[in-house]
Image 1: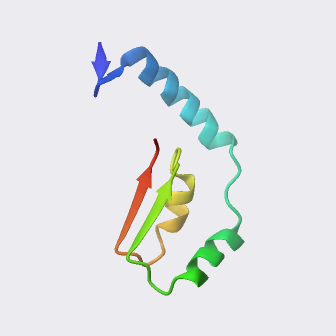
Image 2: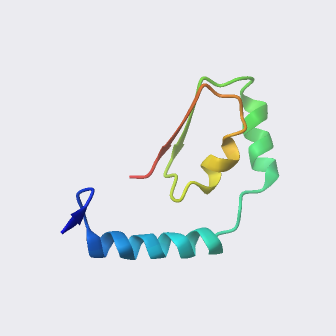
Length: 73
């Protein structure tokens, strides 16, 4: 069986690992977000390549960009 084209067992295993990763991984320092904000006045698009669980993406959300794209290969 599949869930959105992904094996159910694999999907359930990844989901559990992602939850643990999200809880255990430290957040990004505020200085990183401030640096990104300072580099671009108002970016059109922000791309978070290798977004993982989206921890950095959520911190980038308040930046006034037209679009934020999170990609996890």
